Length: 101
Image (cartoon, rainbow, N blue to C red; front, top):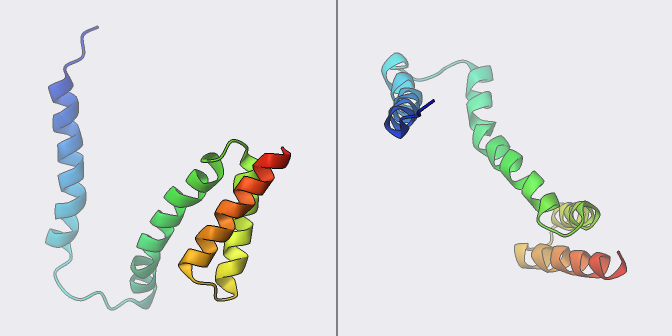
């Protein structure tokens, strides 16, 4: 069965354009519903989290060291550590955990 790559590209382009154009054409005025506004406010953060958290755990040699670094980084950020300190702590946790595994 022969597959034509141009059909796949055309379908992918159509879907991408539909996702971007339909909201602009269907929603003309300001969105006043608090629930919808709240949902749309958090969509970028959820999307970033969904892409980032699995990558954090899978980027190391063992999932345990990635999970420990994630927990340590979240705790440090919760207590007000800067981004540099959080990154340094996470790298250190991964390095030490990988030494003992």
